[in-house]
Image 1: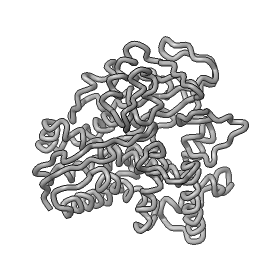
Image 2: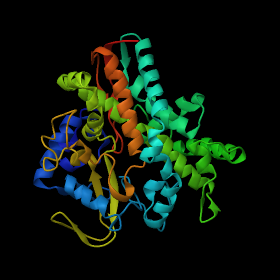
Image 3: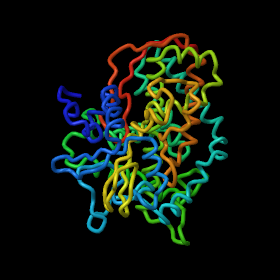
Image 4: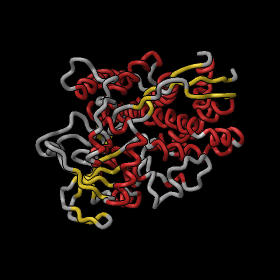
Length: 415
């Protein structure tokens, strides 16, 4: 992470400096002070677009609830400069970049695949993949890097099997996803790439253009076939539209869940009484899954642009103002949760977390993510005799999705 920590002198930098997220304890200490003193903090950085950091649960919920007032476009993710919607078109638009009727129409094309009933039908296959992951962990002996060897692969296998992609392509998808979401992390940066984001997207596009052609020629029953042959108003989607779906599902559909799983195990290791409690009462797994998402908050933020002058909390917001919704801060809000800094696998208010957002842009894969988290921890906890940290713990440097990067553990696990 480096020795320099400028956010210690300028607290607002915790939201925009990728390295700050790799120091979660300090991050939360600073965020707690901001929530108390200036819950909507104006962050101004040299040469960068200013924004409001929205840190309280109630305020984040308010912005999410009023999608007509706070748009995702033109830029739903923090960057140095907010694109001009009239001059700068994104290389590809996903659901995250859409608002209003366009968002509703595109989301409707695949939403049925992620509804509770559809997801429940995947239970048996997801349970089997969870067993496979824990079997592989057992086969490694008594040590592994849980973040890289287990958490990174299980959700990837789930989402790419739903898309109908061959397992031989999984390593390529993992690498591209890490490069996309970890562009600020030195371990995931490409060497000699002037614009890593565009280069990674180009690689994704090349891969999924072929997937689209294959599924249009010989459609199947998988989700990739649904996307490749989808229509809006009797018009087939073009290649960039189909690519937007693939990019969102194949990346966000696994990277956020793998982060939650790695962060969830870390939380259990740091709170051994809660691990023992979960082992003694596996029925707590449903609440524990939501508590893990609340605690880890894999998605750190999304941005919104105010469409007109309005108010958030006690703060006046001007039309055109940019707002950063800090889910990580909101999920530790003292006004929203009882003892928010206590990890509690039986927490009764855990399902109030905003880790999946809220409202029109509520995470499409929330039900699937919960099912995956429950499956892997149900399998792991039932077979563990012992587990502990066994090396240096490090975190991803990233402002959008971040969590444990390396989580070395030593364990005794039943085959």
